[in-house]
Length: 138
Picture 1 (tube, one colour):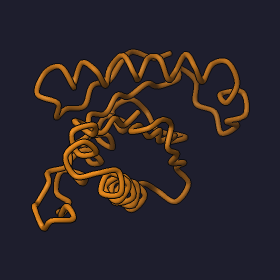
Picture 2 (cartoon, rainbow, N blue to C red):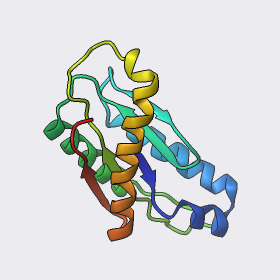
Picture 3 (tube, rainbow, N blue to C red):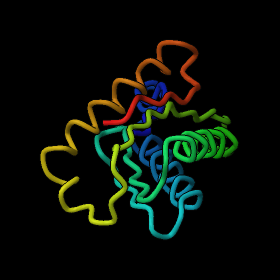
Picture 4 (tube, rainbow, N blue to C red):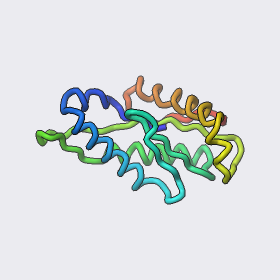
């Protein structure tokens, strides 16, 4: 789960069109920094989900940090030319079993996995809003 930090401030200060551009830039950055067989989706207003099949907890945490750093490194200019820093907090949830069939994960267990990663991401938000946290296997 990838949560855009302080996104409401971008929308409020620079307008929704600028916020939409920021979301597109973040999505492009996430897509560029994931593998071809990973799945990326916008989950909510300012949240994204990255499904990384065949990835263990250690690799997932490293990938989460890589995604977080990639977004932070992006230059984003608001409509008035002001540079606006973009950061994300990332929560990671892993399944205990390695499966290549994601259909069962796309039913009820998905909400459980989502809740676990959501629990991790806000903790990153409360600290300095720049962080990656991993939760135990689901």
